[in-house]
Image 1: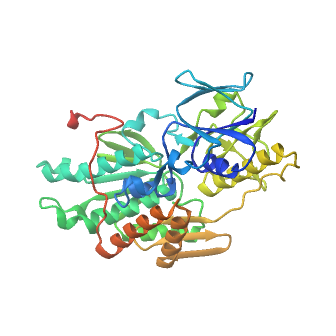
Image 2: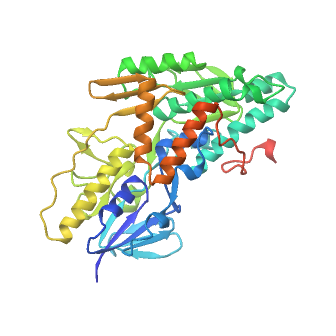
Image 3: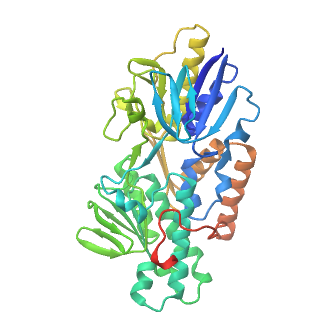
Length: 422
């Protein structure tokens, strides 16, 4: 019987592991609760109407159709039986393994305020993106209909909580949409009067960047019409609005970009975890005491060069490559690779149209040239010529026409049915 490798999660780390095992003498089972691989760095562009869902997601079976060594299962994992060496699915199916790779990513963290999720959705899945897009577009439509000025202003107030790259990128495009693209399409409202707020509990936005680039990003956002509030956390969040620094801000659209929590892998393994629920792994990315269980990506707490590895796509892909190399070396009886070492690829973030910040060590870039570098880098990492072509054409169309191409309201609410939709 061939060596059985089970990979849970078809994100960056999981898919890279499967790709790296091509030609190895093993039988692979890939399990995911969705049928697609998602390019999360561009998910915010689906939420803000720049891209369609099919531009950044690919069916897993189609990606691996030529891999006879891979079996793909659509299912939700409920646990791992380490004694029996089996993965337990919600359906009751038990999938045996000799080597297990867990790369199940992260979910939103509301810091003990989980009830906020229905009113302030985060951005981790396609469902999240289309929910946010729907709420945002409906807010403009309802503002066009209402005769109540206070209600109209609340509908035209958009708040984003958390000023990391996702939050900054979201408000940048939201400002572009409200202030430049939509004004000529509505008759009863002036969308340029929309209020867009970026709220950060810390002292500055983009805390992973230098003070210089953080300051530039803040100034660029404010120039585009975004209100930036730092130094105060949100203390209350409801469908009616938010409370920050003792001030109640009526707002019908709130987006959460403030934090993440690892998946339940720690509980499945009864393993030690950090404060965010990530599994503590060794420098070979395995669970201490169990070298045949790897934990990767946002699910893992990894130390490299004395620092925790960040939860970003390049890190996850590098870990997938490393795990595959380690498994192949074991199967072939070769020495194991040197301890995992993360190669930092730099920090990148866009700030609306034709502006971005890039930082790689001492090298810093900002402005329109940084925006082009950011775009080229993201197109390069997309899967397949079709996606690269379609995303490039979508961006070119937006650039030349000033029109976002995916402004469709296509589904019902996925998190909560509001009173207005009953």
